[in-house]
Length: 196
Image 1 (cartoon, rainbow, N blue to C red):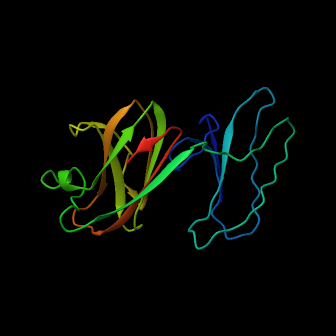
Image 2: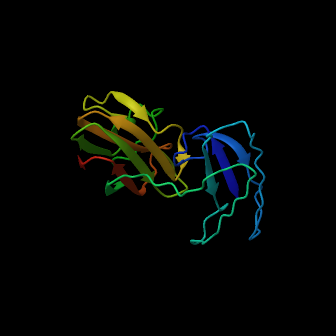
């Protein structure tokens, strides 16, 4: 499958709802895929993000992307430029699988991971969990006031990208349903040093 997005400043996308989709490829089981993107000759310096995707990942794949155009263009691989990365392994168990905020009595028992930001930085946090669990993260200050979250609960994966000032914060990781027990990973990436 091939997806093409516009107006995301040419940045990497982590979720299919992150940008303005201008081409949503047909789901086919073919080793070849052809897509046509009409681009006006008068439009100058528009940045697109091209995503090559499988319907369901079974194994790693190699691919070649070839592009032709009647206007001048450049094609390059996107890099995040995050020089600092750390992974935290955690779990929901019988005492902390509190579920979403609809479960007022148990939500606060969800696992919390603290992070200290040393200088203003861009921080990317990804949660990876069993795909049968819908997951979300909430970024809070130490008084448990919500600063932002990763959006809607998503199957097995969610992401939060933000800019933070120096300070200590906490990330609350939750499943939609309370009582869902299992492991998960939090992957932290930043352009500046941080402490967990």
